[in-house]
Length: 323
Image (tube, one colour):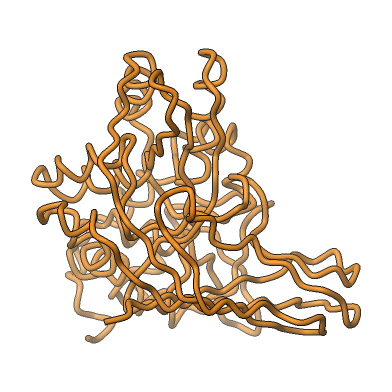
């Protein structure tokens, strides 16, 4: 599809005004203009209009560079139905409008994670916040943990997940959850370090899975409930070759059992279609087989290398369904 395939009268200025651009302290502007044109299905004139409307960029060697998150959010809310983010979103959430029974059965995944230490200081042990699924009825098999080394390493396993209907019963938890959903925060793609700054994210009127989970955890605790934001992986995305940061809230309900509230997935499903009501309800207390929880808390890293480098380890997951 050519870069000119979106009509030139797309109201890019209005789209730019509707989102929050990533603040400079969290922005990484490393995507050249050619990538921006391809993601947004537009030409140089439209990029000029976006820059004039406030899209941050950095010019290097005569080429403008942009933050991936800014480009994703512009595409997501362009309402052209042709940008890469819109097409990816519809593909990602096509399951949410289907009967949820398929999300409750056991499902097995080929789980592979690559850990990279960009400024590695030498050989040292690696640690991955591994899948934490036994307590949710899942199981791990054929686990291969990385040996001490330098540069990069891999963790592999066969992971079986399952789902269960365990809706939240506490009126207080349900009210707090619905208050959050009704607050009008706009979901955006946001860098993980910025998501941990959940106060800033919500001050901007935006939200994301980690930021939402951290804020909701705080509100649950203030109401007297035991709660923790937890990170993990959302499975089966674009064939498995896309690592999406994911988080949810684990909270002890009035019946003494642990419930999982996947607030961001409920928000996104609601944006997709009114036919996703059953899935939205599933996100409010139940578990489903497309999520692999980890041992990491909501604002913690997923991987570590004990070499002494101050640069965070890059974690890339490739999670594919085992037929």
